[in-house]
Length: 462
Image (cartoon, rainbow, N blue to C red; front, side):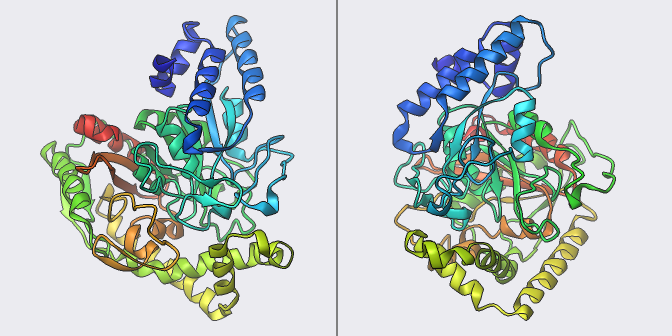
């Protein structure tokens, strides 16, 4: 079973196609690992019966010589914010603890159509509102190797499940770094695609969207595979209506124009600064043209907090009168803050969002990619109170500006970004590199990340 769980999604799919591996064996191995590592609390719902039934159907399709999808027979999981038909989607909240959607989110429907075997739903903080891996429904989710440190949030369970071998793939969501932060903390790869590239139709305001769904995997190749499964046009998504620009691709780092963003308006812990800089220097040694740049990502924090608080107040606020006694206290506080915002505050946030987009576009005009740390410091100890002022990596303030200033601005600007491992601390905690690029250039990001992954070797394997 260990051999099965060590396989990449690509190798697993290839062996299933050849008949060398049964989808039932792969699914059972993942279910066994979920049970064996129940202490990590990565799943809020496991559908063993449904998964094995789907695996048997997948096995019959292989034997019958039917056309097979790219992840046929490969087990995967889905963050509990994303709708799954016939399987409860709690949003990490007691409000929706028994909610069973009638239809899949687009990403889930496409994963099923591609032959994937849905194992269950992974844990998330309530409505994904905070960077701590706890919720009223599922309790605390633990880091896969360092239980005294956070696994990141809000795609907490997805990152832990992938890192701990509970299936090679998971669908996460990212409203401010919620794919990239737990990917960074758990030593895996996570991709936030361009706004609209992977349709996410559950949002109440698609025109002002800042939340994305995307792939999480142990390596770049599997992340690419899963991205290609989920990405594509949907007439219901306003951001996916235009013609895509020509895709940029590369099979070499030589001549690649790289903007190195070491700080982003914040201080970076030396434990993070050294390995991320070493990764950039390794790219430069391979012929990349590296230019250090200075963009104040952290300055967008007030605008992001306005968008976050306003959204929570409008979406969850109406439930407070009935469910206030079972809602996470930190969520109640965010709702109250959102209720105090004025129309002018919300408008100013949209103006700041526009300004940042313009600045980032100008910076990218002469660059292919921008590379930065994903986080300013290693995974935080679970004792850190992320609801108030924190001191992280030499930064003081709220956790968003202090710990992950590199992630949340890209949710407002719509640019694609990938987090990947690039080393560990002396304690063995993962360190992560972020690669971002122009809108709709996910394939370029994945090309670059795969080259960096090969270049770094073991350091890129978390």
